[in-house]
Length: 282
Image 1 (cartoon, rainbow, N blue to C red):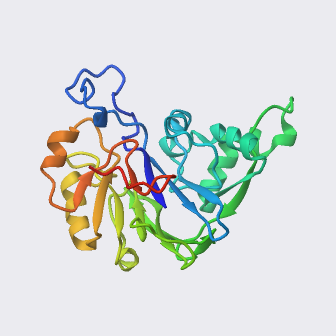
Image 2 (image 1 turned 135 degrees about the vertical axis):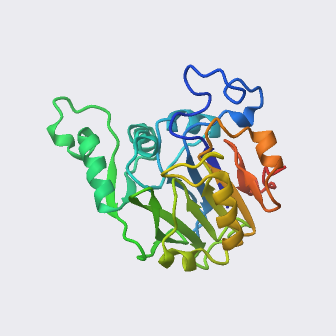
């Protein structure tokens, strides 16, 4: 079982185009941040390797090459913004490798967005040429309705991204796989408020992945300070902040955080690797 941070940056990515700030020109590789997404990889109860993506942003190809990814069994979508959905076309390579379609899980309004943007995938029979496109099976998510995938229990929870209702995910073992020091995990990106009914679903976590955009107030994201306050309330064993802008230098920013709360970085892996080695936290 391992969770990999495929990307930890805000919608513009870091370095940001045309920016000469200290973070965008930093030689610390942790200051290079692709668009935020995550990957969970585990061995299912039958002994097969499974890979679950959370969001598929415009940097998916680069992230997949960096991580040596060769399969994706399912994708969970938090919401329909460009930096979380514009990598869908890249998953066709996993179809080709695996010889299987891929389940994509989203709320109805997000699925409507995917169908509109990716008509060439979802309405393939209308393409002029029968070209190389992804093969996807749409699946519907609803808050509070738990799904089980290959030994994992996944619960969509409601979060607010400004005025936009989006999803976070609580992921637990269904008792058939080892959580590997990673699960229970809650993934809460692009969040500026947590509704009252959601707090109870974020208890007793091993890992919390939480939005922490910058230090200044923002209308649709937690600041780093707000994220620290939320982390203290949730009390996960370890909280990792994601979706950081170029206002947050990794080394200096991470050093200022309380124990148990850290800035994540691209490629950070929690849990064990494919050969059973220890995680990459240092």
